[in-house]
Image 1 (cartoon, rainbow, N blue to C red):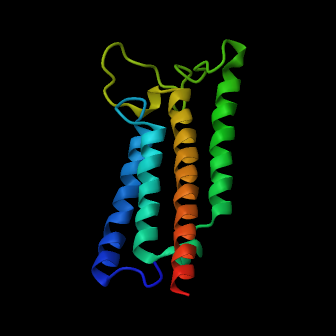
Image 2: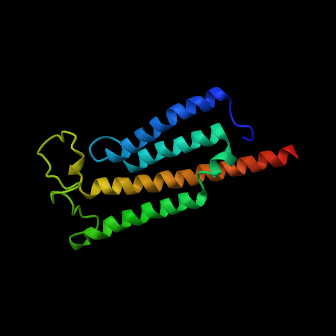
Image 3: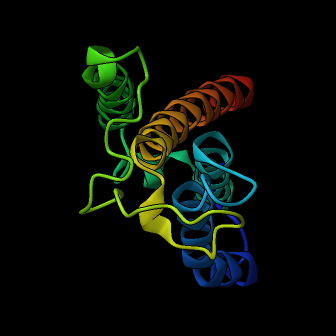
Length: 159
């Protein structure tokens, strides 16, 4: 959209964009103890990028968010996911080698319902973060590419 949206839409987008990001990262971080996870949270964050594109237009958003940056983030998420899978290969592929080891994400798990402790997931939490990074970047590239193509078609039709 060449002209962008109205001031009301831009103001509301500015107000809710941060909340959408926080909620998306919350879903990613809590995916091992509640419904959600990396894919769902990544899709929520990518929808925030789509909201920015619709509100402010492709040209303005491309100055902040490039396909190259998103491709690098996508590759990083994928490499991290595969790395965590191979690190447990001493026992089995995708072995949860961090669980019950102490430290970050290695707190001992309780028997029964998890009281909400984020540090009990082991490599599952780390893999959720890697998947979230990969999905938000991949969907961001898709949305950005579609927006650029739609704007190019719109400019050609005006000529």
